[in-house]
Image (cartoon, rainbow, N blue to C red; front, side, top):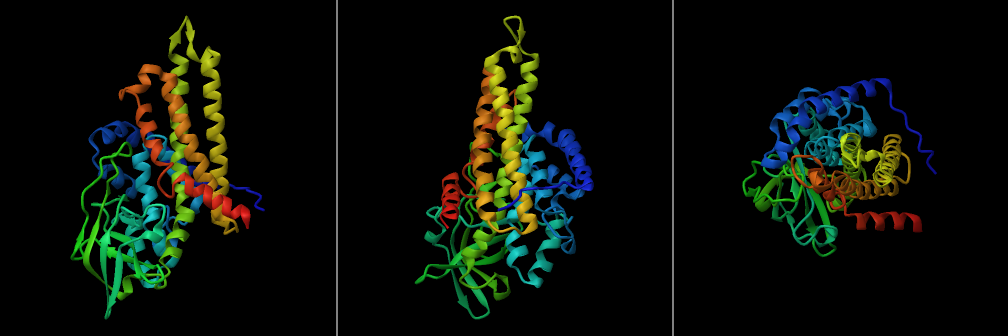
Length: 380
């Protein structure tokens, strides 16, 4: 059983303080506009690259900060307090490269990771399909060996960073008879690759989500990632850790909404007193703060377990993602209620936060799937 103790070194706190300054000074003022236009925030991405924020997911040997999972997710949380869309820039930086970090050859690591650590390249993770979301075994995309190459055909769905990614980690069936898959690195300029149409979404509007397709896309054998026919291990080994990003994003959203609602409640006067003097509002705010703090503790414990390589990680990352995302949805809805009519209009950030929070219950494995993972771990 894990003790759950975690420590944040002083130099990490200083780095985080710098990130907070960037977020408050540059990200927060842009958040509403990014949501309104739906345009990808290239300026924010460039800013993150310049301040080594995009280097957070990587080891020092690959040009990264080497600061580990807890520091990475604290940064995601900090950014999400102002903009869930901008937090996703960092989240996908991990999601699209972790398969290479965990399963790649030394040549693959050297070819892709340093250029991501500097922010020169953006990755994407292409697992989901129109008929295979929570059930990756139903995947229809195929890859067939042809001499020194693999030929990929199929359609993916709900892929973050579509149209802006420089390469995609793509999962495809390589053994139909036994339902086995393999993972491949596919560069964006491969002939037959089409990024497809972008989705029009409820939230995280400045993050492009699309449906890339592969028509006789040829990649060299050295672009196979991990062992052949072991793609599911690559996917699950990655998601076991990256769902912490969704948890961190959720905690950030919940804290951002709580802070805004609390500040508003101090200023808004009804019946002659600030509304934070009314018990109905006090109890809402107290519950919001308490649940957010509890979600953060679970997140940080799971991050510390990942950094220490402790057993039982999947159960704890699933619990963190499940609890934090449910809290984010509940808290943002309550925050809108605290503001009343003002919460419902886009002059204020809470309706955006509520829309953004919903996806945290869905991606990186739906919360129903997280409950399955937790229950199976309990049954062992």
